[in-house]
Amino acid sequence: MNHDRNVEGLRQNAYRKRLEAIEKTEKGIQKLLQEGKSINFKAVAEAAEVSTAWLYKEPVIKERIQILRDQNTKKKKQYSLKCQTFNDEICADIIVVIDKAVNKIETKNMDWDECTRCIKQISTQIAELDEQIHSLKIENLKLKKQIAYIASEMNQNI
Image 1 (cartoon, helix red, strand yellow):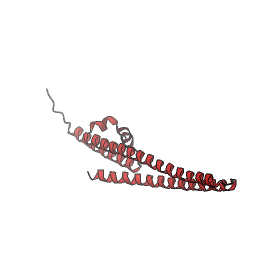
Image 2 (spheres, helix red, strand yellow; image 1 turned 90 degrees about the horizontal axis):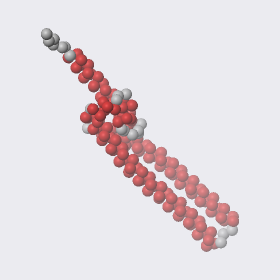
Image 3 (cartoon, helix red, strand yellow; image 1 turned 30 degrees about the horizontal axis):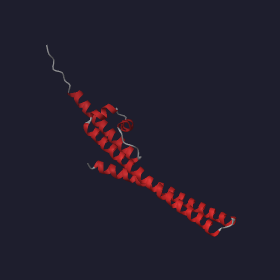
Image 4 (tube, one colour; image 1 turned 45 degrees about the horizontal axis):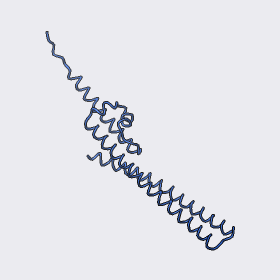
C-alpha cells in the first residue's frame, strides 16, 4: 500500500530558508564592502552566518563572490604598485633635499652652525613630507571606502 506523501510544506519551508540565507548573504557582502574588508567565501560565510559549502552550492552567489574577490585582488595589486611608486617619489624628494644640503656644505665650507641650520631645515622638510604622507594615507582610506561603496552600488544594480 503506497501513501502519497504531502511534502509541499517541506518544499515551501526549504524555499523560504533558502531565500532567507540569500538575504543574509547579501547583507553580509554589503557589510564587508562598507567596512572595506576583503571579499572571499570564508569572510562572507562568517558575516552571513551561513556555511561556505552552501555559498559554493549556490551558482549566482558563488559567481558574485568570485567577481568581488577578483576585483578586490586587482585593486590590491594596483594599490601596492601605486604605493611603491608613491614611496619611490617621496624617497627621491628626500634624496634631492639631502643632496642640496650636502652640496651646499661642500661648496661653501660651512661652519658647524650652518651645518646645524641645514640639518634643522632638512628635518623640517622631512617632517612636512611625513605630514603629507599621513594626509595622503587618510585620503587614500577614504577613497578606498568610496570605491567599495560605489562597487557595491554597481553590484546591486547588476
